[in-house]
Image 1 (cartoon, rainbow, N blue to C red):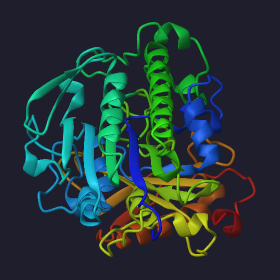
Image 2: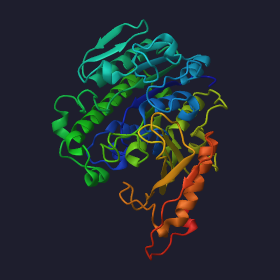
Image 3: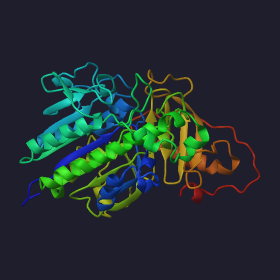
Image 4: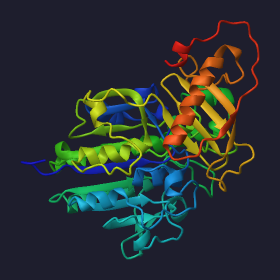
Length: 449
């Protein structure tokens, strides 16, 4: 970093946003032109997979670079241990001013006291933003635990706060983490409230194939959900404009990602907490120093990899304790041993585990364990196998297919390896019953593709 100011770093973090809301992933509704353009200029992570399709656990992973079974935050409502080292601590130790704006979801009290804010210098947030605010009633708490009502639609009020922070700290390197609630549902209404007029604009538009086939709450909620995504993208555009106007854009790393997706009650009785693509595949892109012109990354990238990536890009040594890997060497073509699969844990609604390669998704469930009470299990049962090459929306479960027996074996071993690497005890996996089909069996080479 000699000879120039260290890069600023901004995290633009949405909540419950599916990967296929982006134009780069084929959505025809023009919801994300700013994200798409930023990703094309920078680096697009095509296969970005959360390691935890639950709000609090995913946040614990991103803040610490550790799996939720390591932090202990394996379900919502478990606060981040106060001795945890977060991104704020690492950036502050490198001379950065740190700021947090938005939803925290890693404490057990509201407002969040200083000791439970993960070490951030500047604070304007709520532990459960969906409960302290509404679409046109944004209330968050400041450094002194005082409520602050911000005017405008919630996305806009939060973006205004981001821009104010940037303007106030433009003369020093800063790390700003902004966690939006959109496009998460508003709990007390069971609705996805967009800005006025946006629901009507997008209702009746394109429906992803899984939602078209499986129903759920799609027809009730998708228009509002799309409207929220659109306003988020407009906010991203405003942020980029603000950085450009302050002559900070070229020296600011921006990461856009989400904690998990949304399956609209098609996979279980709510909107996430499932290892299906609709819950775990999220839009992710980087822009700025180290990422400009990076192109599209096709390899599997986990949420757990994003924390070390941010530190590495800022020239900060990645702590050995972190369980993910920086993707910078991957972008630069300097690594040939990148993992072929992403590992997913869920311990709320179900206790399940899954691995996903570019082609295959394999998941197991612990029927005798209770989601929310047990972090893991000593026994799992094979739950599903999907061939994402021909079934990207996971509509045909192949777990009982004789034809795919070798795939199950390969993916089972991948899953067990990743569980061991994450510090979990190796469980027993009960094999699914095989049903004969008479078709050609998939080869081992195909299983490993």
